[in-house]
Image 1 (cartoon, protein in one colour):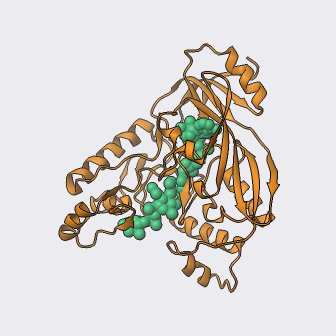
Image 2 (image 1 turned 90 degrees about the horizontal axis):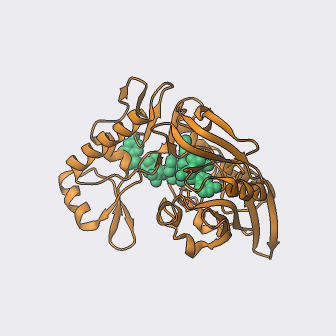
Image 3 (image 1 turned 90 degrees about the vertical axis):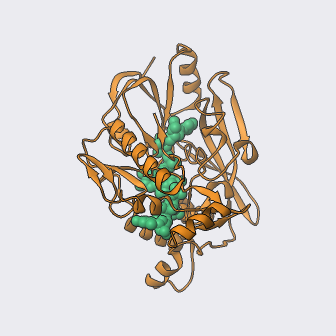
Length: 338
Ligand code: FAD
Ligand code: EPU
């Protein structure tokens, strides 16, 4: 198969910086070639689609084929007075795409600035930040069904988006290669600055009049102050999801732990920050040789350079046990553990 390489280190291809090897490695930059290559594969070959590697924890060498997505291109499909519909190939870098939208004055993704990774992986977990999720601007996506080699279209309903969830993390897991994503962006802006510190940051920046760029700049500033840069210390962002519990359980915990934060969700549910639970159980800032829990944001597990994925998985397990014992809350990993 043209371009196929063997025993390739994935250190540069995952933001944890883990030095594991893929048995086979192949980059693809057009859908036609991808389909031809899939047809040549032994059906039993395990496949892993790799974007920017910013939401993956490799715990061992990968005994199969890693397909690195390099599909590129941004196309304006149509527009009306209110919206533009833009098809983005899955290998485009998400943040570069957000910057492109800002240049074009297309609103809707500015709150999602500086999220690492590719456009194709964004619907996988319905990326979200600062009060916005991709599902709000999502129109459809195209994906190759690995079993049939057919291209299928998924609208938002078919994607079953939830908080850090989609069908691609559930029953469709490992069965599709997302090749393009079509977003419906806004020409008329409605800014969402109510979340977290955006408003204060805009004020501190001296912004008099809101703009897409100003909101993006504020989000970038907050993120840079809170989250470690994977270029400096290996990480995959939040390792766990923020758990959602029943209001009645939350009230029980509040009686015992009065400072426990909670955010109301639909259906008498409360979202509790996992960072708080992890800090309270004493893990914040702890290091164990080459790995640890970040000193400012305990939801982020880190590799200081020479750590191993299995060690990080073990640490995550211990954190889950502590939180379950102390608070009776089960933490679920957000990161894809391979
Ligand atoms: P990868 O890590 O390469 O892949 C993730 C999963 O998707 C894997 O299972 C992979 O097999 C699969 N996959 C990838 N591409 C495709 C495809 N084309 N078709 C089918 N399957 C595919 N996430 C948020 O939601 N909000 C945040 O605020 C946020 N902040 C972060 C901050 C930092 C510092 C880091 C390191 C990560 C952060 N993340 C955040 C997580 C991550 O950036 C997102 O999940 C991102 O969408 C992952 O993209 P990727 O291309 O790197 O995916
Ligand atoms: N907190 C602590 N101790 C800390 C840090 C935070 O107790 O050291 C508590 C505080 O109560 C704080 C709360 O946690 O108010 C929330 O912290 P933060 O605003 O940093 O956000 P988060 O809930 O930890 C989530 C997402 C991020 C996203 C930000 C902004 C998840 C799992 N994580 O983090 O997404 O960027 O909100 O919207 O939902 C990611 O998915 O990888 C990611 C980074």
